[in-house]
Image (spheres, rainbow, N blue to C red):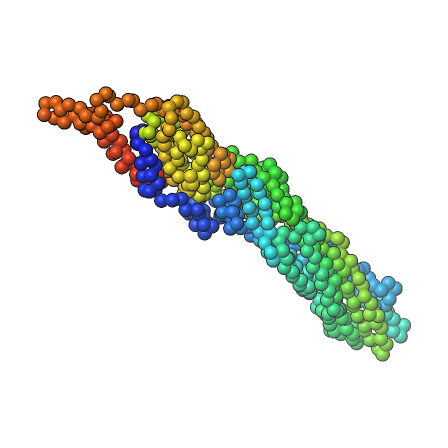
Length: 481
């Protein structure tokens, strides 16, 4: 589209009619991101503009939680103790831990060095808790002689049926819990978990016998959770080009080849480690026909074998809206334009992305190639027309480069080559500006101008209509869905 406009009228009309570019505030940019269309695949977290750099950074919140019961590989039987005693007990113990880890943080993508990735953990965004439980079983053995008679009994002590003994510990920490990790330590005092009368239990086998069985338990537990990496993968389950993030303040990156958005799968991977000691203190005593037997109170310590388990969370998918700029022209030839006149061309700028596009337009010859506005803001899935005005000040061939610099991640700088020819204004005919009147009509013209009613005058009338049309400023269009 071309329109020949004289002087500074065209550009002034553009600038007066078009509102000046208003820089997007973080809250506005965030609102635009929230209105961005969802991708075809479902996601768990929508990235919104970062507070400190809303035009070149997006941050998606992440929440992870995993709970599991871990057997601590302590399935132990003491055997008959104390050896050689007329009274003996055999104790069995199995230890397990209900473990829960919660982590909160974010995936942060920034550009134009597309796409740089960080995974900051949230202050106090981690929680590590464990409940250690105990299953206990017991058997007793009696082998005594009274008045030359032997009495023997072996059997379960059923009133210690898988007693649930709990040790609870919890700690909050700054996510992600990198090396050396988060350690929980807890110790309990001795607790009596069983006190059983043996008279009724054994009386049928050894008439007249009486006694008790008691069991006290204590436990020392240490548990540690450590995050080893934050894994970041593309949708085809390939690790991003910059690799996993493996330390506090670490960074990664992903190759970006254009498009309105990027989706990435993120998950922490770590381990849980347990060790500790279980203390069993049994007491076993009986009396029969005036005689008594007992075993001394003794601590039977059972150390947990070191238990370490991988702790991998389910992935969270993060959707990152991005700006995506396209120009409908890469070069413009304004043709021949008289010095003192102007030719205006429109360039269509389209934001095919899902985030606000921020652009600044400059030229290396602003005297000859004037711009309607230097700063632009284009909403997602919107296009605008931008005016470039060629107004030669002297005759000759002129060329320049118009740069469109934006927050487009993969093409932050795009160029438009512009050129035109300035031609000298034709000399006025001899005799001044007056023409003779013919056939009663008026062929008058202003000095140096076109005759009224002539083809030149009609051209200027058309130019005036063109100016009126252009004075509406840059036209914004919502792209067709």
